[in-house]
Length: 558
Image 1: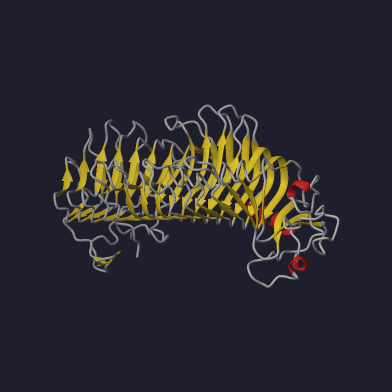
Image 2: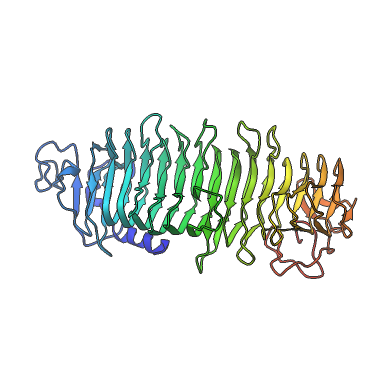
């Protein structure tokens, strides 16, 4: 089931609760949603007398005074807690399900959110439950996870809700926790428009057990605001792991539009902020995630980045780490696609990353162990990467790092003021990588560092490398690389180190950028129209196609 279907179920499950708000003063938020024929049950913990859901002792709605007094959950019904109130519960588990078109909805009435609270257990749990929506409620636990999804779960929606603390001091527990086990199975889960604050571990966490052969499907984490995740121990804000040895998979994962700030602060080493990976990364052929889209997320002022590994092909779905904005992070890498196939890393903006105490890494994009042949390869294109200056170690502060990979295509990227613009290292005897039409400016060490311990040859075509603090092209390895029609200019230590062959490069030609911070080309630039045609996929940083016979060097085809 896709996101639009999930959202439709969430909307049609709810009811207009205006009657419940008739006596409030208008302060705070209240639920106003569309009509449904299901009954509405009210829960008001301040109703100390009766409160069995049948009397009017505490008001016209005849509320329950405890969620524990609900003995049976009715498909299609709405259960509304009094906004601004809370109930402390221990091991409170919803064990029943709604049905297609008739989900059970848990929400709030009146101003504010109702809070499920616990000091000794999870705030709320489900077990083998399906077709449930939690809308505009709050969860808080000072013991462990806030919302615990156990055994199996299908068609579950968590939206417009708040998660606070979700654990005890010194232990990383989670906001929404998918239970790990050999038979756990979750499908059509949507976690949308929620706020997670100071969660001790991850906002969302799910692990495929080593003994599992289940296929989780359609997990959507959308438009959530996460602040202070990993407050008690280093933990990704959003985390899915395939344990070593598992035969299980997770398909159709969408992690989009989330804002993550001030998370994992103070931990060294720190986990990633968004992590989807198999936890033995040296097995590149074992794909456990099919159809993953990590898009339009904003990560800032935190430790960690986006780490995605062991992704395989799902027909009809383009795996994509795209349009994310990362800034002011302490991390090994901003974006790290590892051991994956059919992966597009596109239109991300990555600025001001720093390494941890080791002083190495702190790179913008780290692509490792990607060896799938074209057309199922990893493509890194149209990204803007700036001001990753690294630390005291080496390698450090790379704009883009490609390691142990083959058939990786890196083109139309703008890399400005990084320690090393692009480092390609540790190759394999396989199809070459392609590095084309990138603009690399003002690297404090080398513009391009090609370091191979085997005889792999990669192609470097139509690139502009300007103003490096050491070399424009630094070859440290066994073999000359294939350089075709690049410009190297103003590199302080020289344009080449150990690279002998570069017959068609334009050496010593100023590419004539439009302005100091505008790397498009002036009309009289020697880089205009002299590039070689390397394929129909050639396009620039802004998505404009390359025109055969009129191809510019660098990242812009203006």
